[in-house]
Amino acid sequence: MTRFDEQHRHYQIVAQAITFLDAKQGQQPSLRAVSEYVGLSEFHLQRVFTQWAGVSPKQFLQFLTKQKAKALLKQHSVSNSAYNSGLSGSGRLHDLMVQCKSVTPGEYKSGGQGVQIDYGFHPSPFGYCLLALTQRGLCKLAFLDSLELQAEGLAEMKREWPHAELKQNQASTLTTLKRIFDSGPANENKLNLLCKGTPFQLLVWEALLKIPEGELRSYQQVAEQ
Image 1 (tube, rainbow, N blue to C red):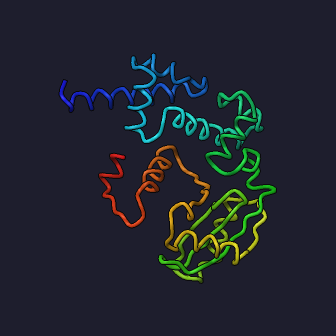
Image 2: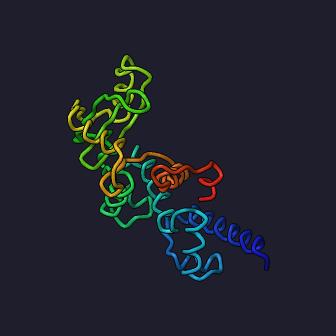
Image 3: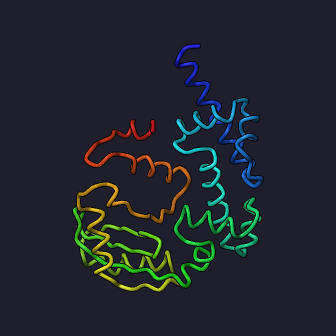
């Protein structure tokens, strides 16, 4: 088997695994179940899937489950959304949402009820920006062409979090702004991010975040990663 043939085979296996995870998401299939379906050992599947998809099968299943739960939370209770997402209870949904999204299921469902969001407007290397924080991390970073667009940026955030307590706190957000744009050791500048997007968007963002500071990557390299 040539290297090209092996790569094509791995691609097909990962595609089959993704299809299986998507179809069986509500049953929360184990790594063993996926490996038996595609005819590969658990160890080999874990390595090949991570190499091609950028995340492990478990992480990909978590993305699918979170997306399903987010849709259900718009119309159902937290407990019902958890069970209908294939989880054993609301506690597991809580852990999943906090880990992947930095908000609890209840906070997401309520549009930020009981959540305080500190925000501020600051100049940045890319023009003025609106920066917002919850107690768990950065929840918004939007760039504005001018300060005259402050009201528009704030209105957008209010639409995203209609019931949150919004508080302008220039000092707090300035500290975070400096951590984002000031150069320094990477371990000192790590930030918790509240990311909202599809599973594919999250994979792209993770690939971008892995680019070392000061280095460049082409679109092709990011796609391959």
